[in-house]
Length: 318
Image (tube, rainbow, N blue to C red; front, side):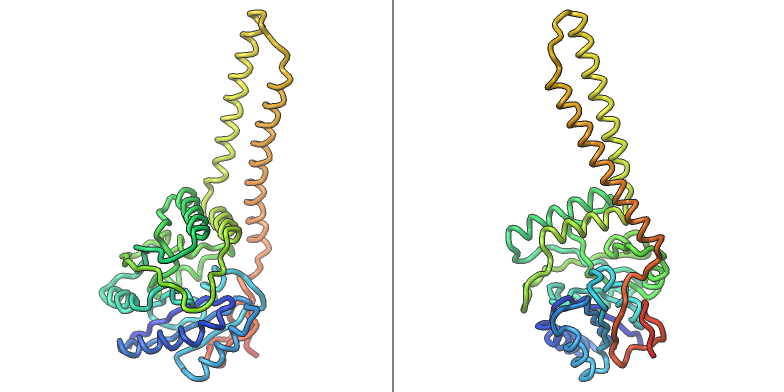
């Protein structure tokens, strides 16, 4: 019988673990779907992992792991994919803002032969104005940079085991799961869902964290920012040529004036372009530096007793 694995990244979600485990377990049992739930605590500061251990002892279908520190959502997703053993894997938020009611529909589509089932947001639900603006800016930046419509996309998706294996074999350390599922291809279909309200707790994403997440993922998945350096260089040259022609014409006409303001503006514009270009190049060099060091995506400090395998990430079972 086919098994469905569900990966649930968790950061300071002690209030949600038990409720999420209960809701998903009851739903999957009702739908007669053989399953496993994989909770990954991303270096949580609260009792998230203790709650994971508790539900894992109560339900053999539940397993989990804990990072040694906070490594980020991308790392938790790939750690979860590594631990799963199911024939198909769903990635969803631990707070159940990704509606569990859509899971049976995804599972049915997978049984029909689809290898990637993408969850597409039809509504973002109730969010503060500040969060909506920051999230909207994040998705616009990402859509422009990676040339994919990320406005309604999410990490909520089902992928076949062969797709999981392809993603886990990728050598890069800086990954962007949401875009990589598009990049991998395979037989894909989409399903719409409405974002649900959180039952407990608050979102851990702020404008700054979303912006940092956007920049990191953009530079790990796209070279467009590097191409912007060339565009800025061409614009700077064009501006300089126009200014030089204007200055020469005024000189020949005998109407040349002191150019202190013009010089200052020219220095500021060119200097700004140069510093921005250096910043973009520096960010890519940082990504290269991180890849060359070859450090693991994450370090697992502990796992529940029912996790199989000798090596998971950088953690070894004794």
